[in-house]
Image (tube, rainbow, N blue to C red; front, side, top):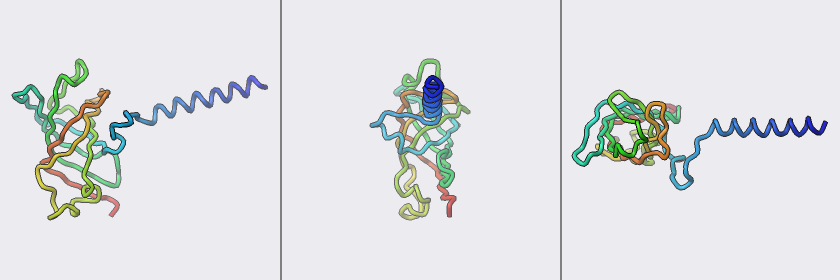
Length: 155
């Protein structure tokens, strides 16, 4: 009977630990990645800049909250050597990035002074995934936003 009870608790403990690992994403505690909004993107154009960095024109859409839809077009630059070996970012590639939006953007476009954000404006975040390949650690990016639509779907 003791053996059965011990095996039962051990099984519950192991299965609970495996399920918890599958459902959560962990980031370094000082990175603030937990507070950034996840977005999916698709690369529309790729340029090589004079300093060797890669400029990417992308369209993006929020993927985190069903109550707030954010869609836009922008451009981000990164150092291609920061990517893991064998990974590239080309036209029509998709991926995920995490972006930190300013406070007025969380409730809709009408809360910006004058009803529109000052274009182009810059958002900061991290390139997290290209295709199915997770980038660990995520690469910091600055997204220059050229067009944006913010819709609070709860209203």
